[in-house]
Length: 196
Image 1: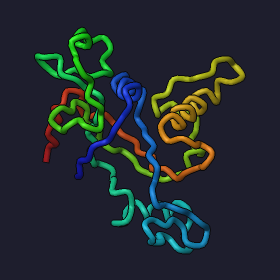
Image 2 (image 1 turned 90 degrees about the vertical axis):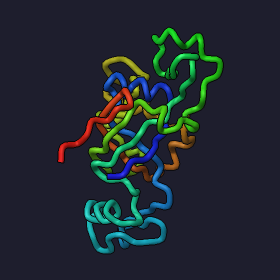
Image 3 (image 1 turned 60 degrees about the horizontal axis):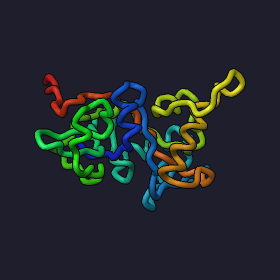
Image 4 (image 1 turned 180 degrees about the horizontal axis):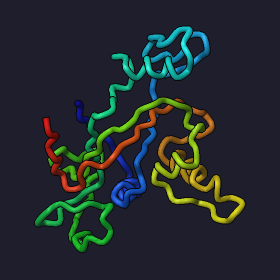
């Protein structure tokens, strides 16, 4: 089992804490796919002559893959601050200590010791960002941006597209992404020990 940090914006931390977010998508750098060679990652072909699913499994288990596996842990880096007596987190809008924080510290600078949320990976796959289903977009923790009976079935996908563009820019470039599914292990920084 490996443990590594992962950054989340405040709204996504709130979605994790509310139990609405169980997936995240991150750009799969150096990943391409074609029918003849399968997935190529960092110059290595994974699955020549294999099906899409077989070649995806090859890349996930390769040392040239995403370096993520089911059972690995992610510690969440989020915006936080010191209110004088303890740490407080920007995602906790109801925390009365917010007004005592002189300066919020960006998530990129959060040390492991300040982390309160630890996730366990339950699934990893690679796909085009535009392949996201409505149920997967909902699992991304986004709130529907459109309402109405006629638009309800695409509401989460549209909201996710807006989120994606705010973080990464051009949705229309159709990048390959790592789809990381997870469950929350702790929200207080203390990870329960796994029985041997």
